[in-house]
Image 1: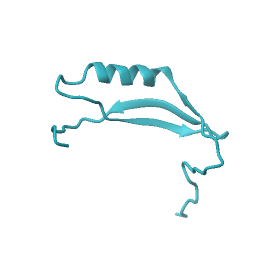
Image 2: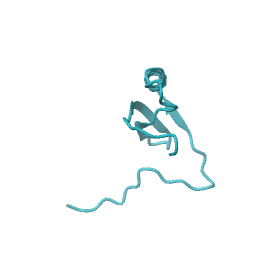
Image 3: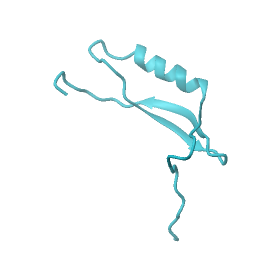
Image 4: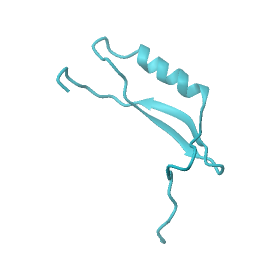
Length: 73
């Protein structure tokens, strides 16, 4: 199997970066934040998507990553 030279995301200072976030993602982030445990101050998660041929980052889904942290972290 040949190795691929393809880079998922490439950033440079001269490029403008644009993104498209689907409504499901906004709803899911808000829902995870509202349902977080009482002692949690934040929600950590992952965004899922792809880079379109025109260079736009298309974010189509998200999910929360379970974690625990103490006050000193």
